Length: 148
Ligand SMILES: CC(C)(COP(=O)(O)OP(=O)(O)OC[C@H]1O[C@@H](n2cnc3c(N)ncnc32)[C@H](O)[C@@H]1OP(=O)(O)O)[C@@H](O)C(=O)NCCC(=O)NCCS
Image (tube, rainbow, N blue to C red):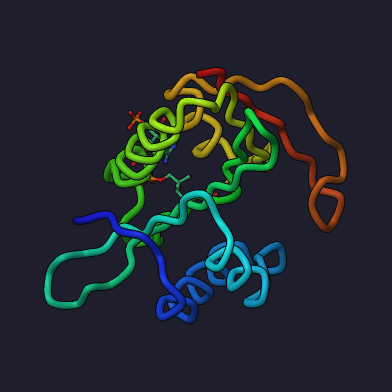
C-alpha cells in the first residue's frame, strides 16, 4: 500500500467510495471536487498491486489560523479492520505536525460510529461535545479534538 495526494483524475473513484459508504449523508460530487481543488491534505491509500485501486482516503482542511478540521476518513469495506485506517491517520497527523502553526485538530463523527470513535481515541482525540441533529435524519455527532 502507498499513500499519495488525490488529484482531479480520482474524482469518480473517490465519489463512488464516499457514496457507497455514507449513502444519504455522503458529500456530493461537487463538494468532493471542491475539496480536491482546495484542501490542506487530501491523501489516498492505493493498493500497489496491478489494480492501483483506491483503498481509502482522508481529507483535512485548515479552517482557522491555528486549527485544522479532519473532514473525512474512509477505508473501503473489504479492506477494513486491517490497520489501514490507522496507517492513513498516523501519516496525516505527522504531516499536520510538520505545519508548525497548528495547535488543534477537530472533527465531527456520528455518535453511533463506535469503530471510528475508538480509532480517533487511540490517537488521543477526545470527545468534547455532543451536537444533536448534526446529520440528516437528526443523527447526532460528537465533536472530537486533539491538541498537538
Ligand atoms: C473508521 C474506519 C476509517 C477505520 O478504518 P480501519 O482500517 O477499519 O481501522 P483500523 O483497522 O486501523 O482499526 C483502527 C481502530 O479502530 C477500532 N476498530 C476497528 N474495527 C473495529 C471493530 N470492528 N469494532 C470496534 N473497534 C474497531 C479499533 O480501535 C482499532 O484499533 P486496534 O486494532 O488497535 O484495536 C473505517 O471503519 C471506515 O472507513 N468506516 C466507514 C467510514 C467512516 O465511518 N469514517 C469515519 C468518518 S468520521
